[in-house]
Length: 317
Image (cartoon, rainbow, N blue to C red; front, side, top):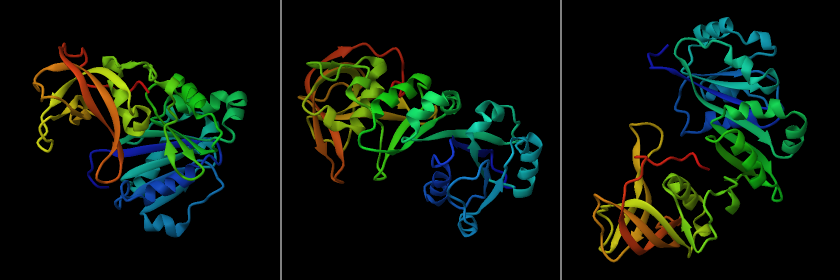
């Protein structure tokens, strides 16, 4: 076994035919995720799609089928670790076994959970929520990502999103449409501030929400006024009369601090060592690569106290 610091373990869960096998295949073939690591795929149910031997060989993956719940034990995982010496592990877990069962199984040394993903089929979502709610939602409460796939144009994504957000405030929630596109399902009423107010007042703890939503939906804010606290940052590539307005954000850990904000047009460049309360007009524009984004145009700016929290949070939406 290579002397890597730890063995990352991913879990995909969801009812039969919710798309788990297809997603694992996409993960293995994704160059951004895979770069030749020895991967152990532990499959706990037979689905509609199967893993082809040539596919597994191509992406340096070994498949182990566990058809009975009792087969998933600490001893069996220890044996698999010794036999296959994986550099990472992906579980395709059977939701019927219950997420609490897996929590009682001791992982081999250096196996560490890094991501839990729950998948659900939009065509059966409401039915399962009514008739098998606990089995469906228990994994969702522990998930880092919840993906609802096979969404038709008339499905009520906003309503589903509010249900999911209530049970898991921190998970990333995505909806996959029939054409393969994905979206977050955020509607005006899901936002913590009034997006239709004459001036959208954004509190300090809502800064991250505005930042993320403006990246996904710049058209929602086009032409509207916003008011929020941040700080101006120097930006060598911006001409006179423009500055970068935002806050520092901890994207995943203390070693990954980045600026989150927008380019702002102003009468002059404010002092970068101070916080300001900015009132600005929003404009949807397009960058040189053809991507839509939001920019700000200063209406007023006055000195303000620094937010109580040093870093921006992204857990509101």
